[in-house]
Length: 505
Image (cartoon, rainbow, N blue to C red; front, side, top):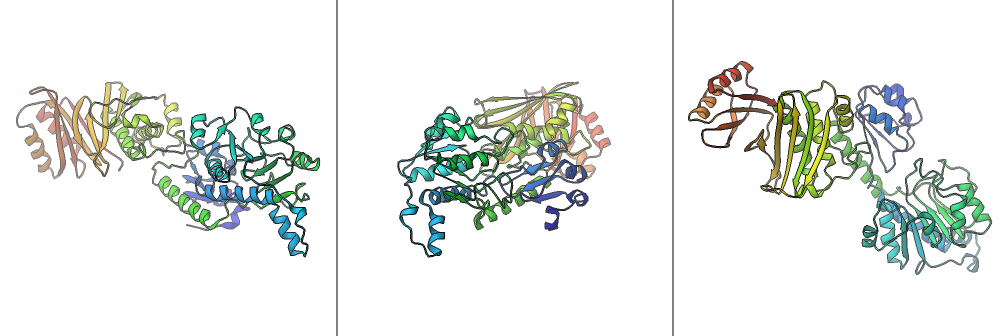
């Protein structure tokens, strides 16, 4: 690992070539030019909430995972919001400065109480929700505008959802912003929106600069329409000068929302873990450019690796020529968002057939380029298992299916059906499957022939539909069996299907 702080403002593109991972803060610009020069790069990690300094689209095209630490500073940001809210309402910094200059002016810095006032939150995500909880403890009425939060979810937090931004602005005594800076939110709070706020209302922004039009805010303050404002973020940072700095009723801080010892420690630990997962090719919970989103429920998380292994097993059983894949989730797991499991299964399929890196980021793109159709089905009904993943492929040789689940307190992986046979076998690196006519002596003969050629069997499971009918034998072995040996065994037992599979473990 190299620590290169000089590259934050230097020629990062010229130096990035040999690196597999890049960890940055907000000042380092990870542009398309930088990504084009990063021949080995697998992950870009931003040690904080935002990723507006990373060209996420360019990274996605190149299969580079972009991660952040979205929960590392949420408590710090929420607490700083309340600190600014109180400081602005009670004129704390102004009174502090006056008194230190020898001026005792109690009447000049008379403030207002929070209790009984209405706080309007623009954005009710992680930070907004924490601010709401703390504001409610002060006896405030909390309302919010967030199109992505249902009224039922807001009511659970004690918050009333407003149908429009305008309806929030006209009711609020204090307005606090908790939105990312995007093309849609740039300049969201401009002259018109500020004019809708109550006379004497106050504005707080600890989210992102640029969401508030600072010149329009200065005008509203100068005209006396607003009683004050408190800002931790600015459109251009570092902000050495701003039209807002000249107002006594404006409290400003230099982007301190995440500047606590605890937040910095959590951000560092989080991105280190995310980088480790990305370099191992595992699912990264806080990847911002994975189509499954950043959140993976505790129900789903243990199944991610199983889904990838089932994908690899499916394509191994198919022997190539896969045209479409259906991912079915049955039982309790169907109650959760299973998109990450479909991504994992797709990754397992593609890793087995492509001679290029496959990640959670580029798997959907690679599938589309190859005309591979992917569908998902969920049902809370599962006859035999609490939760079951079932994958089915349409191939040139007909349908192929495989299913798996987790068992026991340790969530041990089990393959529970192969083709249309029921078995129970733990996935292993080297697996062999035979379909043959059920009759005495076959199991012993297979074991003997493998042993004669130095292939040790780890486990053997047999499933059959009826006595004397077709049977499936599944084996895990400690080392690959030579192809000619398998061909000989297949001929000896009259196997109608034979597959040898290597799983990525």
